[in-house]
Image (cartoon, rainbow over all chains, first blue to last red; front, side):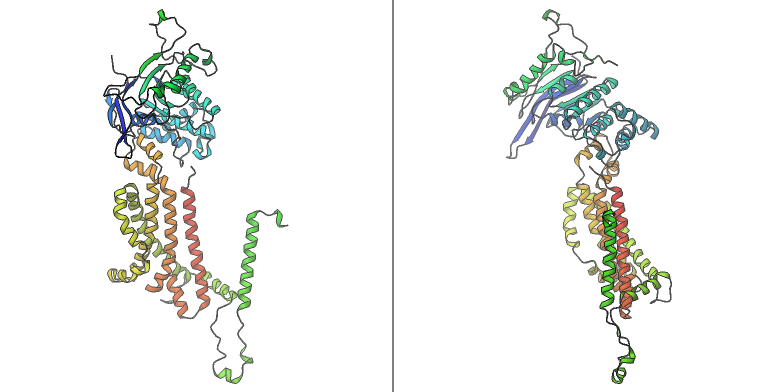
Length: 300
Length: 278
C-alpha cells in the first residue's frame, strides 16, 4: 500500500503532570491524509486535537513519532503548511490587504509589488472581501471578516497542506454558514489538502471527505475514520435530505456521546493505533458495495 | 449662550478665564513700591529709595518676554546671550545624550526581551543603576571625561537609558505568541521577524519608554547646566538668579515648561502614529 500524501506515524505526546510523572495525551496515533482531501477531526476538549494540529504545523514537537509529508519528515514550521488560527492571528497594525501580502511576500519573494497586491486582492475577493474593506485594519473588521482575511492569507500562499484550527469557533451561526460556503468555494477552486479541527458535527459533514474521531483524553486515540458518502458539490440546505446524512450524523453523535468515553484511556502497548475505517452508505445495497463514489467532484 | 458651544470651546473659555484671574491675583498681590517723594529724610539716607528686589508682577514678565522673544538669538558675550541660543544649547545636549541612549537602549532592550537568560543576567545591574540620581554621576563624569560639555551629555545619556531599556524589554517580551507563530509559519528569518513583527508589535510600549525618557532628560538638563555652567537654559536661570533678575528667572521657567511640553507633544504624536487597536 503506497504511503499517503501526509502520513502521521506513531505520534505520541506526553506532558509532565506536575507531580513528577508524565501525562500521555495520545500515543502511537497513526493515520494518513491523501492529496486534495478535506479531513476534519472531531473530539472532546482535551483530547489533543490542537496538539496534533500544532505538531503538523511544526509549532510543537511530539514526544515521539514522525509526521511525513510527500515522503519527507516534517520538522519546524514551513510555508508548505499554512495555518488558519482560531483567533485569526492577523497583525493588527496592518490593513487586511497588507496582512495577505505579508504572507505572499514571504512565500514568493521574487514577485513584484504589483503582482503580490493583485494576488492578494484576488484571494480576498474569493472570500467576498472587495472594495474599501480591504484597506481597513483588523480592529475595524467584524469577526467574520477577520477570519475571511485569515483564510485568504492562508490560501493565497498555496501551501501543500492547509491546517484550520477551529476557524469558525468564535463566530455566530449565521456568519459561520456564510464563511463555510466561501471556504468550500475557495477550496474547490484551489484543490488544496485541508486538515481541520472542529467541534461542530454538521460543519464537519458539510465540509469533509472524511472525519477522524478521537476518543477522550488522556491516552486519547484516533479511533475511527468516517467517510462522508455524500456527493459534492454539497449545499447546506440540500445535504440534510440525502439518505446518508442522518445515518452518518447519528453515528458521529453516538461516538461523541458514548463511545468516545468507553474507548478512552486504553494504553496502546506499543502498537500502532490505526483508525478503523467506517463507511455508511444507504444509497447502495450490500452487493454493490465494491463500487465507490469519487471523493471529490467539484462543481463550478 | 454657553449651551451652543462644544465641550472643547467651553474648556478653552474656562482656561482663558482661569489664566486671567490668576494673573490678576498675582498682579494685585505685589505691593507697589512706595514713591521716593513720600519717604522721610532718614529713610532716603538709609537707602529706602532704592527699589527693593521683589517678585515681579506678571506685566513685567510679559514685557521681558516680548523683549527676549523679539530678539532671541543675540549674542553679547559669555553671560549675555539670547534665550533662543540658551534653549538651543540645552536641546542640543538633550538630543545628543538622548539619541546615544536610544541607540544603546533599544537594541539592548530587544536582546533582553527576546532572551530570558540575558534578562536574568542583566536585571541586577539595571536594578542597581536605575535608581541612581543622574546628577550623582556628574563628579565621576567630570573627572573621567575632563570636559563639562560632554559630562552634561553623559548625564542625559545615563538618565534617558533606563525607561527606554526597560520598556523595550517589556514590550518585546510581551509580544503575543500568536503573532510570533504567524512569523514562524511564514518561515521568516529571525531578523525579518524582529523588524516586521516584533518591532511594530512592541512599538507602542517602546515609544512610551522614549516619551518618559525625553521628559526625564528635559528635567535633568536644567539641573545639570546649573552645575556645569557656561551655556544652556539651566545656566541662564542660575545666572539671572545671581543677577537678582527675577523677571528673567520667571520668564525662563515659563520657557522651560513650554519647550518640555513641545518635546512631549512630539513624542505623543509619534505614539499615536505607532499605536494600533487589537
